[in-house]
Amino acid sequence: MPHVVLDPSGAQKIGLAVIVEAQTGVTYEQQCGGYATEQRTVEGFLIPVGGLPESQKIYDWFWTTFKGHCYTSVRGGPWTPDTTAQLQGLVAQIPCWHSTRGGECEPHYLQLDVERMDECIEAWIPVLTPYGRGILTLENSD
Image (spheres, rainbow, N blue to C red):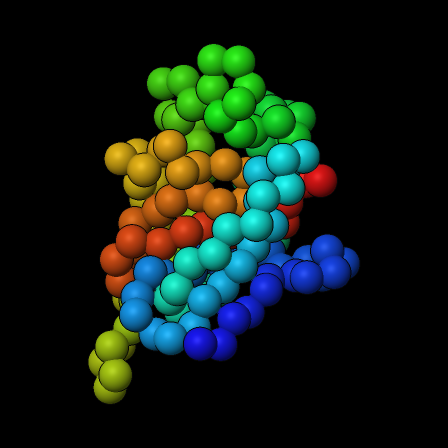
């Protein structure tokens, strides 16, 4: 099974991408969790989404809110109703175009998958896309 590590050197600015969960035979790995520097992997296909403004907003929000410590071992955990609502608002601004073979492209917006918030950390955000469940990735702050 092909395995792709997103930004293995930490020197590239990959922006925002969604890994849509699907049986493709390709797995993607991303460093995430701020200073926890976790490595997470999911099988699927990758879609670049949003742009630099959306990427910077989410990166800045994670840094301002958690200062690199967005993981469940932090006392009280990171996901209060307020932090979840804030992230939900940011994710809802990210366009993800949907297309079918021979069809037209239609704009949609990502949705935070609040049922999977226990998986959510910096640079590994569970979302719903027009293609199904996915993981929104971005640059990790460590």
